[in-house]
Image (cartoon, rainbow, N blue to C red; front, side, top):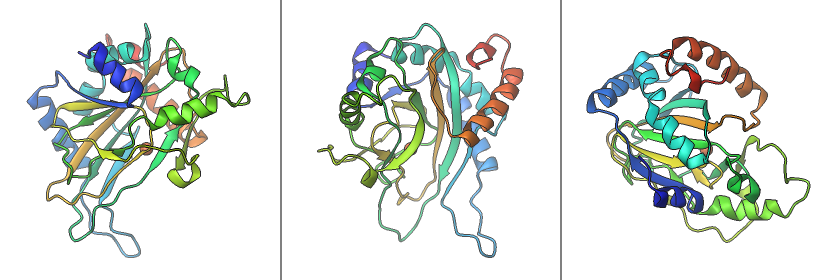
Length: 262
Ligand SMILES: [Fe+2]
């Protein structure tokens, strides 16, 4: 499922790619749903051409819920977060279409920042993010870029700030120029095969990149927290989650509905 060594890599590096038990059939079914929900569209008048198309906490397609409620993600989250019980937090699907004649470049930001004591608490007071690769992701095909270990440099510094310690971690995007200028490692790409998942923390400096390949890149993001750990969300995301959770609880299989918070 996930080894101790892989959990260690998640803690220190911030990302680890592992195999999942998902079948080729489940992945193909999900991929077809991506094509239906996230088509490449020519822009309408006044609209910008978009190569990155996504949806967050707004889909109920059985093929995607089948994946979201797979016990694998609950069980791995328990191990990674050192928690007896975990809860579904958020989900998104994103297709990044090829962008011909555009040089490779990538965004760099964090979505949340922790203190070291959050990362080391039992259970950990942090979000466990799964980037489930529905398509292969290569160095050319819009890999997620990340700076290994950068979340820990930020967390060590925050630990020294008494006004931050013990505060609820909150989702709030900060781009690289807005972060302390630590000696971060260089950014490297996540590469993986369809059906693998990258378990990561978005407290690492990371970001989406341009697809300079010829095939679309598809990822399903699923996040979990330890059951009783509170993570702050911006108001619009909190409201979306509340609505989504209510509906999701109704739609998951009865024996799996416990992963959605009440
Ligand atoms: Fe992000």
